[in-house]
Image (cartoon, rainbow, N blue to C red):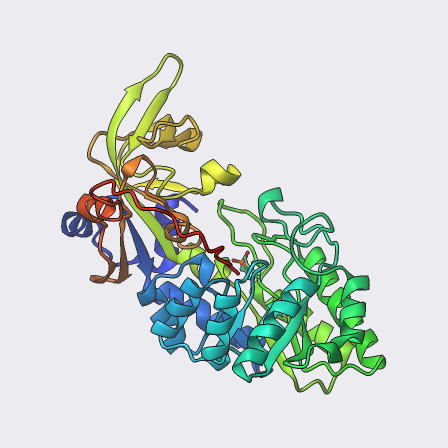
Length: 431
Ligand SMILES: Cc1ncc(COP(=O)(O)O)c(C=O)c1O
């Protein structure tokens, strides 16, 4: 399939890119509403009829308009900070559909989570249990807890997004989880009756997903035999997407089937919560970063396509050497080979090297595909480049979801004057 048809297949039909790029300053992120709705429907169908809480991992893309669309379709949220909690609530997601993950929640974040009535805290250490117990006790609440286990399984993904190995900071090893379950009565404000796992992101092989799911339910069976009740099993996120034409991935229906298999192996009559936390799979392919060619520069041994988007707008290539398909929105041009780069002052500000593309000229529009997940949400203002606009599109219609940040707004965060004050002497506890 050529790239232009690949874009069509992603439900971009009828979008007038040139018109949009007149209405908005480039670069900007565009999300396809039909593609998002189709992903949600496919995911829901894959798990149906088993009631499953699909807790969308807000970190993948926390734009409020996008969250509202997912919330209206019935999704919940997996959050990892007070900011993500605020986003989920502002998008209309009720606390009972929110799970609170993260290895370093502060006491204040726990308090806010309890206040919002989150369904469950996914807890990653004994130390965290103690803090959560203290916070819940002070509020006169009981917190529902799942222990995130670390099954020591290699997800076969990039090292920086692999989270289920023994050496990773995430989760609790099985011997310690066993001890915590046996001591669960110690924490009187906690109801510890769930398990959680998440072994990494952009997983394209079914084997580690199945091994991890079975490792969790084997453990669930073991602790239940020891007298613990198991009311919730959270299989995390991690399902990969094909960033590159032809890249093999696990169909979501297979993922659902392996989770059903794990639940059946645990207890065919299990009527507790089944939770999943997909992020990337829901939104990655529903987003593109639209950028303009600033100039084509002839280097010593190659040509550089210099875009107005840079690593601060889309970090993934610089951070993980990630591949994104790149589609110049032009037609009838001969092919040429480019290193596709941004204007930031780092050699790492490179989207692709030696990429064969239709020949480009200054002013051409270029779409970087697969940019809906971990794109806008990871953006920074490095090189004092303001955050870009985000827009939802549906055929010829568009809705602005986030205005481009102005340079004035960027500067407004800094104090205009340097005013000295004596620092308070009291020690301030941060957690
Ligand atoms: C605990 C947890 N759940 C879910 C996710 C979402 O992962 P993905 O976007 O790969 O589905 C992440 C992402 O790292 C995570 O840390």
